[in-house]
Length: 124
Image 1 (tube, rainbow, N blue to C red):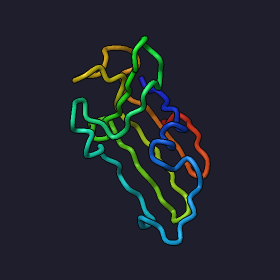
Image 2 (cartoon, rainbow, N blue to C red):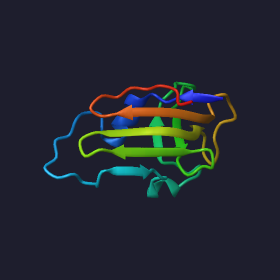
Image 3 (cartoon, helix red, strand yellow):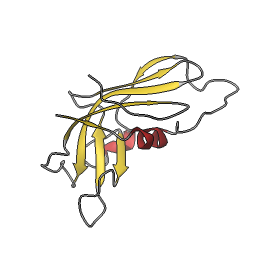
Image 4 (tube, rainbow, N blue to C red):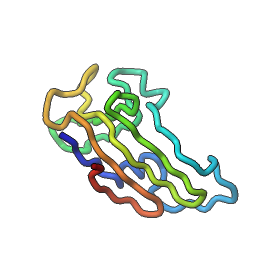
C-alpha cells in the first residue's frame, strides 16, 4: 500500500518551498538520485527525510522518517537550471526508536514536489 507525502513539507524540508534567484546554479542541471542524509545514520532507522508530526498519532512528539536508500525507495531530483522537481517512492513511517512502528502508516510513500510551487500526487 502506498501513502502520499505532504509535499509542501518535503519542499520546505529541502529548502525549495519558494523560488530562488541565483546568479549561478549551485548544481549543474540534470537528474540526481537522493540518498540518506549523512547524519541520518546517527540512530536507526536510517533516513533521508524527517518530518515531525506529519500525522499526530500519540500525545507525544511523533517523528516520521523516510529511508531514501531502502530497496523499495527511489527519490529523484531534477534540476533544469531554473526549476527543481523531486519525485519518487520512499519507504518510511513513524520512527519509534530503532524501528518503524508496526502500523498502517509504515510503508512506501509517493511524492512529487516542484518549485516554484509545491504539490502532491500519487506516483503510479
